[in-house]
Image (cartoon, rainbow, N blue to C red; front, side, top):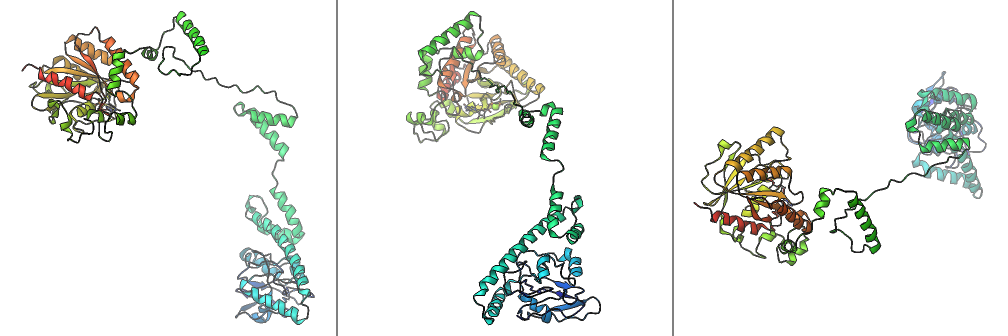
Length: 581
Ligand SMILES: Nc1nc2c(ncn2[C@@H]2O[C@H](COP(=O)(O)OP(=O)(O)OP(=O)(O)O)[C@@H](O)[C@H]2O)c(=O)[nH]1
Ligand SMILES: [Mg+2]
């Protein structure tokens, strides 16, 4: 195989894509040789390598090529002491057949004095482009990569083999080059490890310059040990554990069971751990509540419970308000009323079965499957009239003249006063409502036809407003119910879920004193179970027994489902009818 070597004594530099391949041509002595096999060498992925040698001196500095062909025009720069420029294609062009493997290559160094200074000088800049394994370089292998030339090299190798009549030995050659390639790849990977360390050079680790120096002085094999030294943690495992335990010991808060275990492991002792305590969750059983009692409660259970109840009674156990409420046993007449009017929380299927169109707002207020317009659904003529706002008052002097009989809606904030007005008249949106307590902040007067006036009062109790403002509302309401001449009925709304509160009782006392007629209306019945609706009704009726101004019966409604709305309409229409003019 013809091999050419650099003839110039000086240095030379090859710019642009030398397409250098490494090889393992036998018989090559010094410098970089070309390969007969494309597999040999390293730096397969190398592209655009700039190869330059400096101070090539004869046998060492020469670059040998295989049967490389001229690849385009290449520029060759001469460097060094008076050396002549060597045409690229004549020297390096032949390198084009020398192919290596690997993405990165090592720079040539030892064994090629001519290449060393320049390559080392350019190492930082051209690391990706030039590669050569020092050992391979010593053997005369030059690395490079050019995929375009793969086939070319293949052909060259084949041709050369065929030419020499050594077809059968070709495989052998490949194998030998493979092994050398593998070796070189291992070496490179070692060096790559050090490359990555290079970036950490500033942190007291091996810098690039140091690394190169180290390679020069000790060879590649020692780089690994140097690197591993650098990578070593300052504390070994034992020291680290001790250190951690000491640190933990100094901070009681951080001294947890995990660290205790670790310490015991180190000391070889065993920990006597107390089993973690399980937090017991106590369930308070309401002895008077039979509503939610499970059917499968055993008889033996009953016995033990009975004993417990007796015990609590004997020590004078005071029942909570909730327990008292649950202890109420509603009468059968109230229960059947609640059941018949579909009051309380119901499933949609129940409404459907009862024949109501649940697609419509307040379906229980409808005539089942009626198609008549909204206001025509109302059977009570007084409530078919249009609801019209006509006055608002924040102080008593702003009250309009009491020309018409008035029905007022009072109660805590958010109890559903404004919603009930809309539901009664089936004119949704005329009175503004909100889920935020405290929307209605003045006394609002509405005309319902020529004969009746509806009054929406501000709420009392909790509301999103300043204390003084809320006090002002309360005073205004009290003044209204005490002094208003045309006031024929106050609907005192009570939330079915929460029942009567002290402020409700305060207002009741006031109306009792001023003989203002009032009627209790339980609202939002759709939010509680039917049995609780009945209980609440029983409880309130019991409280109102001695009240003279309270009008019976107690009403139960839901503005959402429309339950009880028709009944309330009928009652209130009678108020308007029997008002003496
Ligand atoms: N589920 C259910 N919600 C209701 C019912 N009545 C009213 N609400 C809701 O309760 C909230 C308060 O209703 P409002 O009519 O604004 O109450 P309010 O008493 O006028 O409140 P203030 O004007 O703040 O005093 C609104 O979100 C209503 O939708 C009801 O019967 N059932
Ligand atoms: Mg309101």
